[in-house]
Length: 319
Image 1 (tube, rainbow, N blue to C red):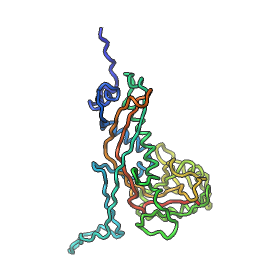
Image 2 (cartoon, rainbow, N blue to C red):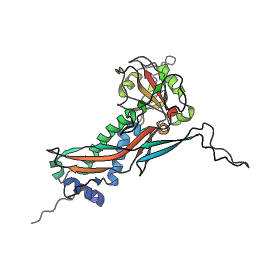
Image 3 (tube, one colour):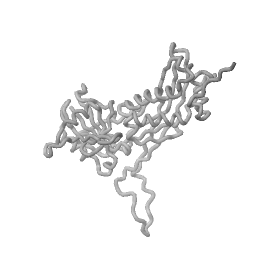
Image 4 (cartoon, one colour):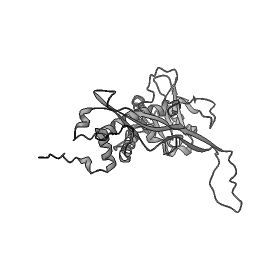
């Protein structure tokens, strides 16, 4: 009597995923890396948006190349208007510049026990997918803030922050001294907000760690007596600080940091200010030998990132 394998819920999905599942389980003898199916990559990208605060706020562009060139218009004059009988001058390119964002290889090494791969009821594709997402999100978060641009993205806080004599378009982030180590002057938060040009306020966010947020939640406006922090009343709606939404990023510096001068709060339009570039594919290689009793997988994707508009991001500095 032949006993047929039970029908699993993932057997109704497309053949690419089926083939990928067979590869994970070792039912297909493939020695080279394979590309994760698009439907699973889409799931990974959606979860990365939730787990990576900078990715959720920044501009993300997919490319088939190893480099993304971004054209920057440094002209502060209006570039739109009404057509007249005069010819429009299209030859002036003095206000244009280019930022080249190189893509770097990001890797993840999820491990599972062999019994999971042998279990016909386990959804191995979801297990691997979730492990890749968590590991890549952790690496991305740090790189988008602190990366040096060598074999990884260039991070926002890797650039120089100046609290005086700021010059626009100088590859420097403008900052405000917001207090001493461990203490934030809320009036300096207002000053920081006023540093951001009006054209960026339409999509401005605060970025800070939960540690910093916990102190700000206790501060009241001296004139009105109201808390400057307002908790959101709806799920998936961010809290606000002085009227602007707050995004929590645990990789941001906390209060009482040991650094002599550090930035616990960023405020700005990260969509205009920071550009992420990536290839829309993730490759994975199975290694059943070098991590026994586990089976290890080596997943890679190419990602880059850099500040493209320094005027769009401001920093609060403690010293």
